[in-house]
Length: 549
Image 1: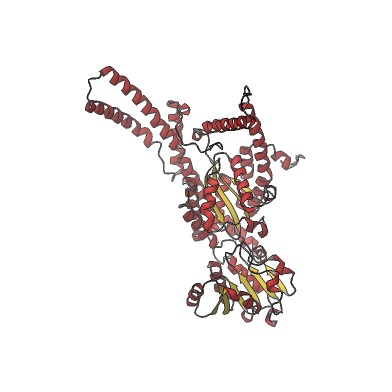
Image 2: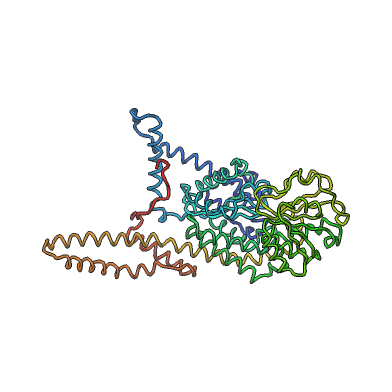
């Protein structure tokens, strides 16, 4: 496009979806700049494409439903009949969809890179609610499978959709309904990636390449948890199971085969580093520290505080057992437990307060903090709240108080801004592994394409067998015994099975070898041509559900 005076965005809006995919899947996608660029292009353009395609679809459906009016039907009955007809046409078109195109794997989400915590916390889905969210999403008309990845830095929805543009709309509307955020506001921050780009994204996420803190290990555990929860949920199917398994493999390989984990920090360690940056040099061991919450993040806080010389702290938690466990794990530190009702009083005695709980409402408001005594001289008289929870545990209004500073996960960018060149080098090393795993996953998914062909070939052979058997039995008259009929039937089945054995073996592939998958697909296309299987309609349970049912 160099030298062209036409704005790039104007050109992009004329691209077809396939051309758009080719455009955004550029060589720079492996870098953080390329990823952000790709996401930006897709966010800016694809939603327009979605709307344009939907408008055309509505017009086409209106034309297809046009017919001689039935003036005897009430208006609401005519609308219902037209809707049922449209859905029936879509169902029929979908029944044999595998012969033309695969369903799309998509991810729609918000991340710390582009979305403020104020919006991310409204969309956050607790782990206990993931099965419900998966069930609701997969129940949408055009979505076959769904998964939810919700952390303090991101909220992402992964789906397998029969129609990517309609799938985008259904997921976006679900997100809007769940969060109360209007769709037009969501679109300002939402990124949308499809097929290869979506697959590459979850691999990068699992490897820690898309994290605020490059190479942090906690995200891999969170991706594993998505798979664990999803396997017990209705709507988390074969495609997403394969996707997340391969993503976990990619994450493990990146950490074991590159130096990306060397010196890598977590969100918790970045929070401790932020505290060190904001306090007077060397004062962290001398200030009073309070941690609210005793989960995994808090455990990491304790670990990194100790590494910085802070060996005395108070932990406020709902139950005491977790704090007792921390005392056993860190015997050299003085860790004291206080019950949740004592939280505000403990805050009045603390200079630095870390909050990390699963509460969906703030624990500290302005009225809780305004009457607290001043912080100690060791902290310069300023009390620091460092909130690494999403949803946030400290209300933004606390920042208005004098001698009080408030930081959230978005402020950790200041800590990780250093060593950008080193981050870029490590990301390029990891990208080679991600590309390898991406090829393996695509080969596995391509191998699934032969399943409908196998079904259709069997159905084709069975139909011929049944017809010829009926003719033969008819010529033999009614004198055949039940045993004789059974023998003839089994003979016909045996002949068919032996004839199909060779073709079936050449249609099966486990997807581990891309070259073998390519040969398998060639065999599939050859068989479809030889037996005219393109016209063979297999009976499948339609995904598209009529709203009239």
